[in-house]
Image 1 (cartoon, rainbow, N blue to C red):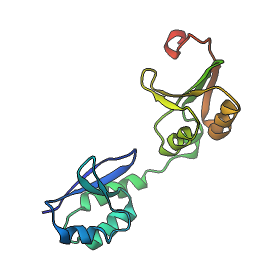
Image 2: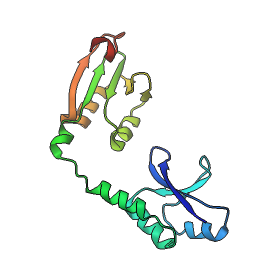
Image 3: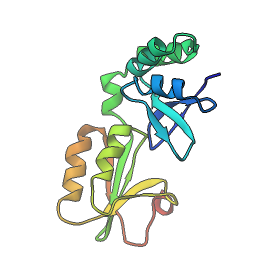
Image 4: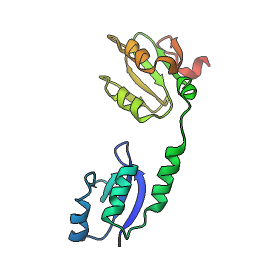
Amino acid sequence: MITTERGQHRDMEVLFIRFSYDTNIISKLRQHPDSKWSNTNKAWYIPFSKQSLNSFAEIFPKVDITIYQKEFESKQKISINPQQEKTSNISLEYNYDEIRVYMPYNKDDILFMKEFYGSYWNETYRCWALPNYQDNLTMLQLHFRNRISSVIEVPKAASKREYL
């Protein structure tokens, strides 16, 4: 029996596929171009996308994944108003040593932040932090452009909560 479960793996939405060890199922899974084994989760998985779900349904027609397909399709129907995107609440704080980026969750923006040398997620302040050197601040402003709500220079010891 094959069970499926929606989840997260390596900062990606996925559909986990679990079953007792069966070489026939494994060989069928390998027919799916995006199927992979997660040693961490001890399960096979595919990306949670319309294309992957449809491909999985073709390979395993007896496994009911319609609930995921409907959920994905309803998610696709929600369109982002371009005005909403422009007014995304992204704020930049910087001092001589560090830049902090407070932003809503967005996979593309997270990938962009990870490209900076020395960038990391600061769990204490719930923001991205990176060294303030070279053109980092300029590159952030160019990337986020009109989605930035504020750019604030702060004293080194200050945090966002101290001056709000």
